[in-house]
Length: 253
Ligand code: IYR
Image (cartoon, rainbow, N blue to C red; front, side):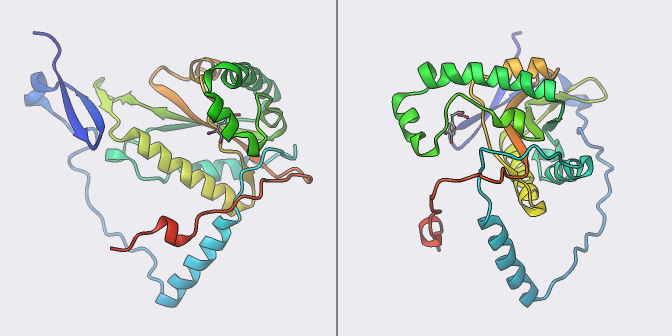
């Protein structure tokens, strides 16, 4: 009998799960079935406080900008630890926590990453990306040169674990791993903003295999984001672009 696979459709997306019919009698959840449910009593805030905090947090996040020039001033290790811990508080499908954050501060490793990204991006800009895509990027002034990869004091590379292995040797399914890692990346960017640092949300095209090998990450992991993080260069500029208004992004029903 050939290996059967089960599929579930979620909107346009087809989710694939391994056949488990042979295991029907010994199905065990990845997390213990005996996991107790305990009281959860988060701090209760007054309505005034909720309103004030909603304004304050919007004001803080509205200040966030992607920057492409960084000061070389190092970031204390504990700050990096705390922002990555914050990213790790994100919700994930069946609490699988399908992420690995590789934090690079070693100048030699940063240089090696830069070499790979610049080589691939040269190919991207010249051949892989459509002419319309390259044209759409003109206002941002990007090109294949990535000095920020060696200038920024830290790089955080966000890897998505497509699956993992349970302690009993069975394959552990990482349900909704894409959206889970996307949410964690949002938490990471918010943490960076909150502590007063800046980042560049970059998605190096075609660099997955080479960076995964360079950083000794296993084949179940895929590179999703490369975030140079640090303080802004004192002469940094950003394009004068505006965000959509609330009435353009919100629909009341
Ligand atoms: N990854 C390339 C190209 C690029 C693509 C988009 I969409 C951007 O918003 C910015 C850049 C690069 O990093 O240059």
